[in-house]
Amino acid sequence: MKGQMMRVAQRLFEGSATAGTCLPSAAREIDAPDPHAHPLCKVCQGRDLTLLYRSQKYGFQVCRCASCRFVFVRNKISEQELRQMYSEDQGFQEFAQAMANEKVEARHRRALQEIKQALRMPLESDVAQHQPVLFDVGSGTGAFLMAAREAGFEVHGNEFSTTAIRMARETHRIELSSLAIEEDERSGYFDVITLWGVIEHALDPRGLLENSFRLLRSGGLLFAYTPVWCLYDNIALGFSRASLGHWTRLLDRRITTAHLQLFSQPVLERTLANVGFNLISSERVCEYNLHLAAYLESLGIPARARGGIAWALEQLIERGLFFRNNIRVLCRKRNR
Ligand SMILES: [Zn+2]
Image 1 (tube, helix red, strand yellow):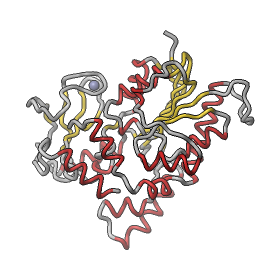
Image 2 (tube, rainbow, N blue to C red):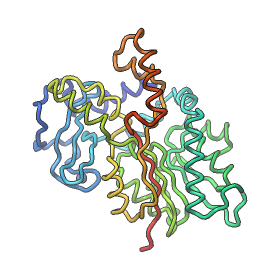
Image 3 (cartoon, rainbow, N blue to C red):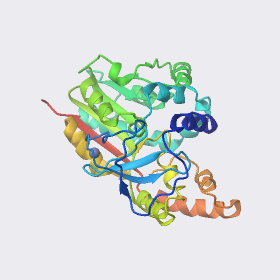
C-alpha cells in the first residue's frame, strides 16, 4: 500500500515542488505565484500564508495561515487524483485488519454512548421509537457502522476505496455509496454524521464540514475524530528549523500525501462554530493506532533499542502522559 501511495504521490507533486531545497531557518512568507499551489487558506480564505517547511520525503510545501493558524499542504491535488490514490490501494485489507483492534472498538462504543446521550436515546436499549439515521463519511470497511447498527441506528455511509466498499458488503452487509458528500442530495435528512479520521484527508476540509451541516437536520449531531497539531508537531518543527529544513522526518509522520492538513483544537472549534455548530464536547486525547515498534523503525531507531523504548512509550500512552495527538469533538447543528 505504502509503495503505491508513494508512487502516486511522487507523480502528484512532480514539478510542483523541489524536494531537497534548503529552507532559511526562520519561516518566510510565500509570495511567489505558483499555479500548483493553493493561493488562499483552505479554511478562512486568508492570503497571508507562511511556509513552515518543505517535506524532504514527499517534496510538498506545508504552510500556516497567519489569520486562522490552519496548517496544510499547499500543493494542489484534484479529486480525481485523490480518488485514484485511494482506489489504487490494494493493501486496504491488511490496513483494515491492523485497525480493527479493541482500542478502536472501544472508541466507537464510547462515541455511540455520547451520541445516544445527546439524542436522549435509551442508553442500554437498541430499540428506539424513532430509529435515528446516521451517516459515516469515509466508512472504510464499515466497522463503525456495524457498531452503530447494533446500537440502534439506521446506518449509511460512503467510501472512495472500491476494496473497502466490497469488504463492507461482504463482511457486514452494509451497502456504501461511492458518491462524495457534496454530491449527496439528502439535505436535512440525517440525525447524526460521523467523521472518523476523515477531516485530515479532505481536499476541502471546510467544505466537508459545510456539507455535513447541510445533510443534518436542525439539531442533528456531528461527531469528528481527527489528528491535531500538538506539542509533538511544535517540537518536530523545531528540529526541522534547527537542521535548516533538511530533517523533516518527524513532521513527515504527521502530514503526508494522505493527511493533507492538521487542525489545532482552537482552529477546529472556531471553524465548526463559523459553519453553524454549537459545541457539546471537545477533548484532546492521547491515542495511537499503529504498532509503536513500526513507528520507531520508521524514525531510524535501531532494532535492539526499539523493544524497550516501545514498552516505555506504551506505559506513558496508557496513562495519557504522551502527546495528545488526536481530538474528538461532538457538536450540534444550530437552528438558523
Ligand atoms: Zn486561514
